Image 1 (tube, rainbow, N blue to C red):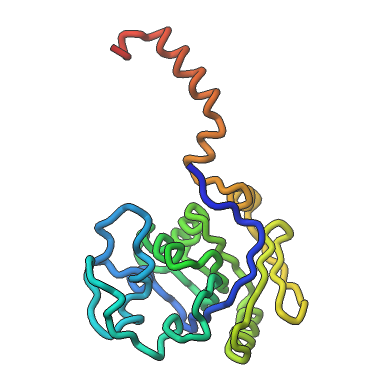
Image 2: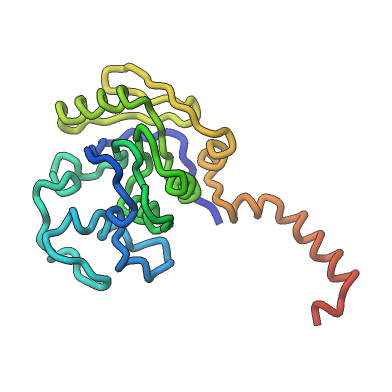
Length: 214
């Protein structure tokens, strides 16, 4: 099993101008019954996105939208980069939160800080969380609000963000996590890199203890 490889991305940025966005806001608890990893995108930020109360199985295409919510605004349609404030992804440890963000279409989240478990879960599900200084994030928010269709280019190989004016912003990422994203490897994919060794061990173990395999 593998994820899509992440090398570079140029995309529209959507600004989530709120601090301490928790995982229940990202994907409310009533949608946690499924473990398929897909199908959560329409319910991302459900309580902020729709005027009614969302429940599993509803036809989201007919639900009334909150026009002032960022993801409902035409200028941010198709965004794949989410710009956020500090402590993004706090609250419960539900992995459904990065599932919902990924299913919606977000591949990158930029913020001054993330909750630890959410941060780790994002990498495991093919999302690149980038930590930048708060002053740098403030500057990006101002530019996103000022320019419709504002895009950033994320270069994971060189660990830098390129702004529309050509300015670059460096960012740090753990080398192992960077390797996994560049090569599209989740935990299962990493394990399967040793498939031949695993098969060899299993064959030796079966020969040594055949009664366990009857």
